[in-house]
Amino acid sequence: MKTICVFGDSITWGRGLASRVSWANLLRNHLEDKDPSAHLYDLGVDGNTTHDLLDRCEQEALSRKPDTIIWAIGVNDAAYRSSASNPLVSESAFIKNLSLLFEKGSELSNQQFVIGITKGSDAHTMPLPDSKTGKSYEKARVALYDDLLAQAAARAHLNYISIAESLDDEDFYDGLHPNEAGHRKIFMKIQTELSP
Image (cartoon, rainbow, N blue to C red; front, side, top):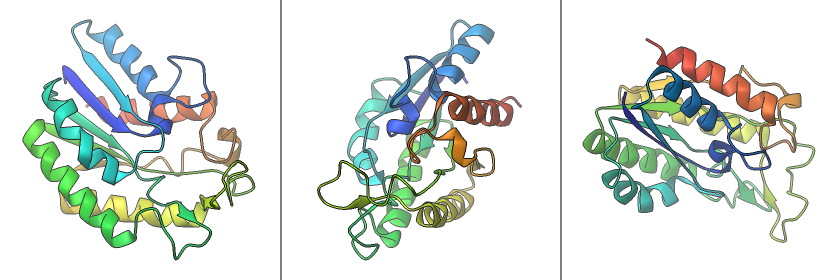
């Protein structure tokens, strides 16, 4: 596992936190300490969905030639505007996009890992305080998309790492983005799963 590309969203790069304390950066530090020749590229982009990753992952992976791809996507797919009948990404589109991403991943790398999704309290996310379109993130809906993600990973015979049980509501600073303690919990779970 010399070169790793982590494709994800704002949770991947650690929105709202000081630099290099997101789970992806903690994983990079951990791997660099073990092997200075290891390279981890944090390719998280704020607001990204599976649609966005389909548009960008191939070019970004080809330029880095990863041995391993880690997918950390889904929370934005689960969001909706005004009502659940107006999703950012429908359940069927989410399933289809995941299948296409995993196919691309098998062409671009030797192994893939899939990180589960989770969120904290709905108090500040239904809707988001600064949203003019009623953009909402609902804990139950995120759990549904996490189930779909786990099922898609199983169908593709990929390693799925669940994080939902590792975090509590207090591990999120705004109900959506993990705080530093939350990121550390995610990192601990992931590095334990990757260690073998």
